[in-house]
Image (cartoon, rainbow, N blue to C red; front, top):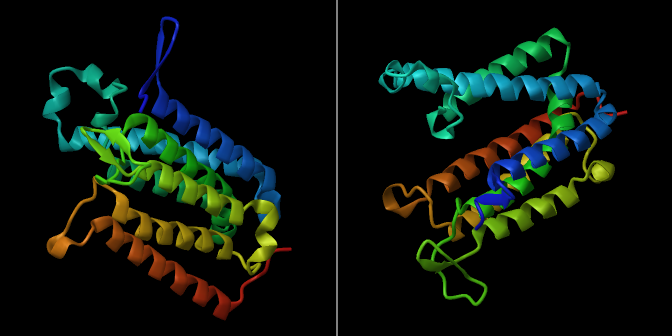
Length: 248
């Protein structure tokens, strides 16, 4: 765990740096192969940029609306870089709405766009796990396995490494030049990625030590993973039945 990277007088938050690097690498890869899905690379870059900026602004405004007392005493807190002052669900909602508006205005079709963004998401999942390893977030459950790592007062499963390995394997399987390995129908590429990621999370969640436990000892993340996996499999079936325009 190394949340801060010291370079001379500079103290850089390493997890944030890793996430930014993952976004850049993922978007660069997605732009390179965007033409395979009949999506313009500049539109792909713009929709990601707009989603991120709108999401950050929406997350901060949502937090201001929820907890106005935290900002009334000092309005400069609205511009604070403290990520704890962001509302993630508000940010996601605003980001998605802005992305849909931009996509509609530019005539970007939903499934081809999601397919084109899949390489970026696959790379981001890898770097996000590494960022969690650097910050100590997403830590594992206590274990007696010889490869356990000492963290937060106990020897734990290196769950972040497990997830990074799984995400790397998914990225390898679905590398853009290998898309001939899956059925070439718009939406199949993205749904296959989402299904594999949900399946990996369903299995690896058992090694996490920070899980939200529901009644009966059920892990909330596994419930969500089951729902996503089911939805993806159903979506793949529907796409096969409708047999829309195939990739050229």
